[in-house]
Image (cartoon, rainbow, N blue to C red; front, side, top):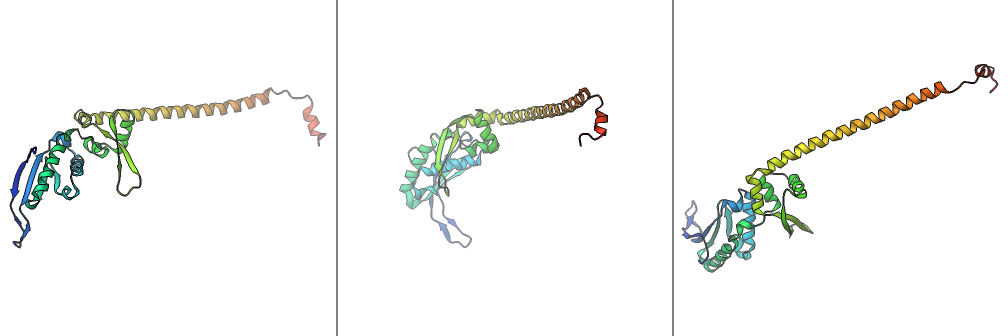
Length: 226
């Protein structure tokens, strides 16, 4: 099979416990899948499987499976022609599989980060997008657009453990913001208390400094204003 970097062999018949053949002899091809392609993520592995299946006819897609360290194509010997065509398509897809953009959920799984952290680091530029992808999700009336990432950028963040450093940086920033907020609130409360005290003091001072009319007490006692 031209172009397939895989081991191809014919699998023997498999029998059930009752001795009845459960599957005919099959053709099997395997392609190595390096760690630089999956980046240690099971979600990334499933994403690669979906990408490969999308390049194949509907009738063949279910015969392809992504396993740890390899891609496996297993079909019956009676489908030899379809097996050859599928194998060639898989080989072409795998040629650039290490550059396949990383999806948001894959990035979270690879870096062990939350969705909130991904959104925050994307906004402030620490996590760099290489573009967007729009897909129609099953069960949704509208298409969904999301950012995708360069696998080498994600790999660099993973190797340098930048996610941990960014998380600690965010924690320090949040603590500093809380401290500043508490300081401003304290100054505001102090200003309000000072304003009230000033208002009370001025009222007493005004009463003390207000001049009293001579003989007013006698005038008031005799009830002349009633």
